[in-house]
Image 1: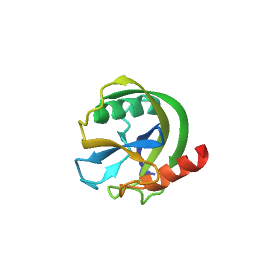
Image 2 (image 1 turned 90 degrees about the vertical axis):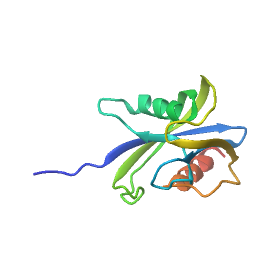
Image 3 (image 1 turned 45 degrees about the vertical axis):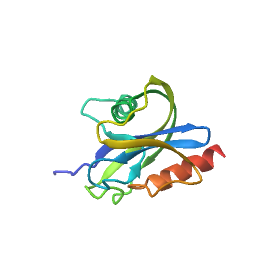
Amino acid sequence: MNYKSPKLTVDGIILKNRKILLIKRGNQPFKGKWALPGGFVEYEEKTEDAVKREVFEETGLKTKIKQLVGIYSDPKRDPRGHTITIVYNLEISGGKMESSGDACDINFFNVNKLPQLSFDHNSIIQDFIRRIS
């Protein structure tokens, strides 16, 4: 039997002074909308390494994992097809903040005044905020 498999992605939450780091997407889907930094896990890559790589590629920031936030698997969360994302809470450990890769802008936003977000990232952030409040 031939099974279809969902794609695996990672997203990083960086919270600093009640502000969350978001990137503005430079590519479709949701081009021009804000999102958590993250992306696809490469073959033979650990998700922990993938989230640090993706965040660095998009933000220029080096990070350390603080904790696992959750796993989000709604088949409709990404218009490109079924993806499952593993979300990590990260802390900045170095680097210089600058947008690159798939990100055309980067900024910290107050958790109570978020812009319109891509994918299911609003739900992910709200889950995270409820846990830490």
